[in-house]
Amino acid sequence: MARIRRRALIPLLLLAAAVFGIIALNVYYAGSGVIVYMYHSVREEPVNADDEELSVRPESFEEQLRFFAESGRKTIFASELPKVQKGGKYLALTFDDGYEDNYTEVFPLLKKYGCKATIFMITSLIGKEGYLSAEQIREMTASGLVSVQSHTVSHEPLALGDKEFEDVDGEFRNSKIVLQTISGKRVNAVAVPNGSYDPVVLDIAQGYYDVIFSGTSFKLYDYNPLDVPRIGIYRRHTLWEVKALTEQRGTYMAVRTLQKLIGK
Ligand SMILES: [Zn+2]
Image 1 (cartoon, rainbow, N blue to C red):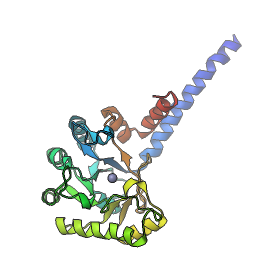
Image 2: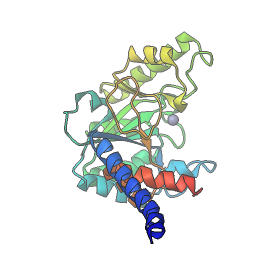
Image 3: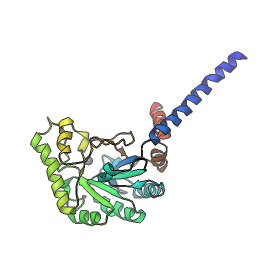
Image 4: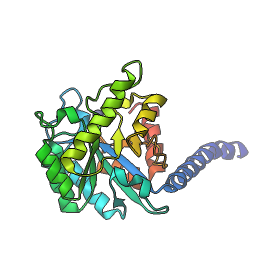
């Protein structure tokens, strides 16, 4: 009798530990008021055949945006991150590279739901096929719903060794000048491409920008202007996952860990 009880106790203890873990994770993540999401392209036909994940379906994106608009989180530009109020609930939606679908697919939906977004533009691609034109950048930034910030000139790896100091400096300086000239707005945020950077690169960037994204992470935003983490949203993400990421980070993390453990 006692042996059976003891045997039944083990799964019960494991379950209690798991529940406690999920609650603790949610409390931990709920402490931070700002979430930063990273998108790339939004279109039905993937923009890159080798990397379909970069293109979120327009229908999925609209579902996500509707949820964000109703979530009680205020959408802000990446450039506004240093000014957020403690205790507030914020969401910064960011789009890397400057795909033209950010104008054709994303911009109309931002207007429909009254949400703000930031586009990190590779300035050497402005006006190139499949990418935003200067005119589209001007129209979007003039609306007050879109902020266009730097994703450097060339999108090449910046870690010194890959590049000379002057070249890295030029990537940060010239992209800022070009975007400020086109939009007539201040450019103070940059997303460092490919996560390729080192302390010197961040030092150079700091000379031109207040907000620097140097990679992605599953941490919630904890304000550090030098190295701001972002969470990538990809084609595979379901609305449930995006909701869980936004509202129940701990549950999402626990489910993802379990999926990885069982190889799903
Ligand atoms: Zn990029």
